[in-house]
Length: 316
Image (cartoon, rainbow, N blue to C red; front, side, top):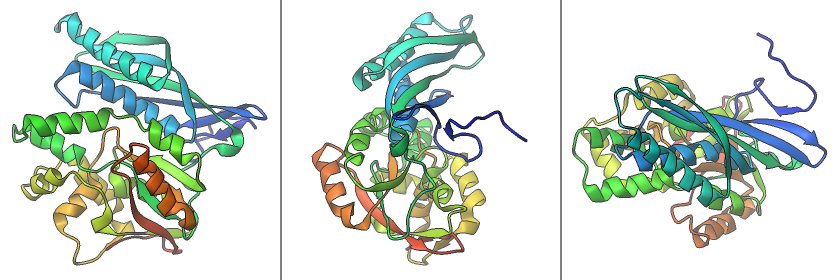
């Protein structure tokens, strides 16, 4: 199938990436993305915050700055009080204000199920666009948020999670990737993506597929929400994690010492997850130090890109 395009499309549908990029001048390109989903927390205000942070993340992952957004809303107006919708939208507005992004419009429909998200437009210099498939052999891999939110949210549905952990995970999902992206712009970064529905290993597979390189992950250096390991061992694993494993397991080689529950976390679908960044080997340690000093406290060096025509993810 052929898609409409022209010579100013820098990143479009010919390759899967986090957003589309279109050149409008020699020194300016637009980044465009859209994302919305059903509630993943009970509190409508926090749902709005998380959905907005998740939509903005794609622009940060492409090396850009989000500038404008439009609301996307589906709501059962005949079955639910409008105060719920107001709280969702207020959550989104507050997150946009935090990010310095203007809300310029939107669209709503009546639906049986709540859905909320944003279309987002950002800007970037055409020479500074970050794609996901441009990692280099020798690059180090940095992850900026801990994994396990999908498993914790599954445990929440089973009423097995403390209020303290619910609050911590909710705030983690609502946290912007803005600070990490700003610090990233100061280093020799080759590629970036945000870790969302495909989980860590699914998104890493996207980065190396078709590139002629592989990845080596040090399993015990990957930041995880500690409680997610216990929940995984109880079988509280979302269906998406099983789907991610089935889809990508042919690309993955796992050392026998890596526990099954840790691999479950690596396949766990994330909502508004962190950035997965490929950075020059010499810059890796200073980059992690700058991230942590800049408030991205969970940032960790988790692995490296290796020469591998078989394009395998080695987890050891």
